[in-house]
Image (cartoon, rainbow over the protein chains, first blue to last red):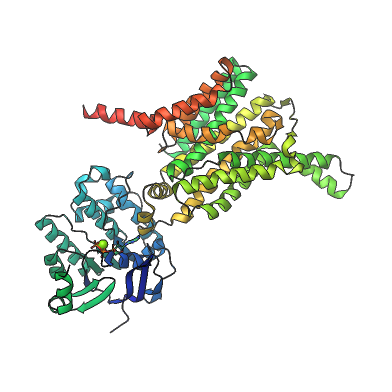
Length: 245
Length: 334
Ligand SMILES: Nc1ncnc2c1ncn2[C@@H]1O[C@H](COP(=O)(O)OP(=O)(O)OP(=O)(O)O)[C@@H](O)[C@H]1O
Ligand SMILES: [Mg+2]
């Protein structure tokens, strides 16, 4: 097996005296679809924050595409191909829906030095990305005119717009209807087939099981299981962690 | 509107304004007009950091003072050159000094921009109110340094004696007025360019949500530094002609509370999201203050500004431009 795209090595993070992440190891291979689950407060979002640089891990290393990115700022990690959606949507409130998408195009895609998008190309790409999440009709609206569900979709589209190698979707589906969940799962699988490696954090188990090729379970900041989804959910410790909740 | 066309419009408006003043006005008009224009530059400058990026700067007077005292400094050096013994060096210096005012404007802008860069490095990791306090402290530090710097007059102040007239322009104040008009054009053009560019989007994301901005690839610290430098440089430029305007420069007048208050109040009242806001706010408040100075007293100025600021913050937080946009939106709906 070649080197993993993402290698999380003994990453630890404390908030005051509280241990949020306790020496977590995680490898994600290129092209993989990984589900990350765990009870509320188990440290999933904290792990995402450490991988993406929103928070700094106190111990351990984050290796991405063969390079240690521990000391890089978030935007540098995004430029290198890491993108994430926030669990609680954080749209740019003063920008329209389409302009929200434009930001990663201008600052990440165009910063990579490949083909430079400008003019109508930019507009077209924004519409294209909004169509993925069925928000194209709302392109000129402000985020405050969106529903909570639409904001989640915008959050996901903005992360996808950065054309990442690794996309981390932090609970993009909370509050969505059954058919919407299916749409988003289908979208994530399609993106994966286009070559994007994806880590999906989710509480909706049907979505997790449809999506994941591998399942990782975090409990109280520790990784307690990592393997084939149908085996992991039968694991005694995992069942215990969820029942004990 | 494309930028070249926009600049042409600005130049036309500025020329018409100048000719009207020349034709109908007197020197008092130019004195008052200069002050209003100076506020347009200050408000526009403040808005680049405060309005576009959301970083409130209470230290405008500090940047303004750097511009002013950079001019005082070079003027004083020029005076000393005149008294030097003749020699090769002196004859070279005689070619350089006195430095023409337009170049002093560039110097003032450069120094203030540099200080902006330094301050940015030290303070831009601070959020919200802490940044605001740091800028306030910066102004105090600069004031202390200048009060103790004897070469530029220290606490006593320094005299600059401008010539009475200038070729082409006539009275010196008219010359300063035109220079300030040019700075207004530079400031407004820069602000409008930023708004419509990638930089403008970047600034807006910083104002809205820095974590999300970083996650979208926006180098927030770099952009904030750019904003501080641009904003500081414009304020320094506005300050650099001040010593020639008053003839006498002292820390008390340069660090007047009114600079800090006005450069915040004018964009807030006009509207902070576009270049039009600071322009409208500065013309409105600046003119009102000029009228109040003549009709009531100069003490009334800050009171008026303060009351208006409170009123707007409560009733129309997006300023006059915001009110206008709401009105348009309502009309198009009905
Ligand atoms: N900035 C912070 N400061 C202090 N404590 C924090 C901070 N962020 C997270 N925590 C704590 O760390 C723990 C892990 O939080 P985290 O958000 O990573 O959990 P999670 O697994 O994403 O949970 P959920 O499923 O609810 O999203 C929680 O107990 C939380 O209260
Ligand atoms: Mg979470």
